[in-house]
Length: 133
Image (tube, helix red, strand yellow):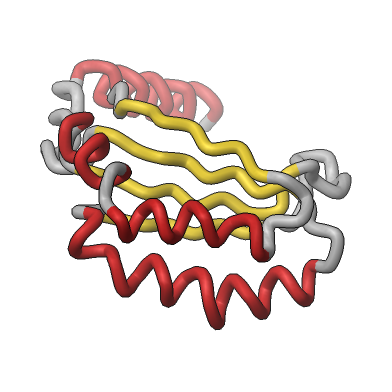
């Protein structure tokens, strides 16, 4: 029994290792702006403003900005169960670095960026990145 289980595991591993590598992800989301929000002074006030004002403001300019995908993440804890330094993250995506640069130069993006001062009381870090996989 133990020998057949080992043989089965060996066949499974060999099969997994000999399969062709997965194709690369489709082209279309190549550049990003990550907005990292630190813990705000008042999380309830942050959430209210974020949901009722900031997200709708950004969404109303999304077409002008040319963003292709937006993911909003709220951090619950660190991996070891501690309170995280970061509170939220907005991951904004564009098809290319050129599209990102065009998008962040628009009045709509500038309005959304200026709005951060109205609710991001813990501070914010904004990073530009490029997809590497």
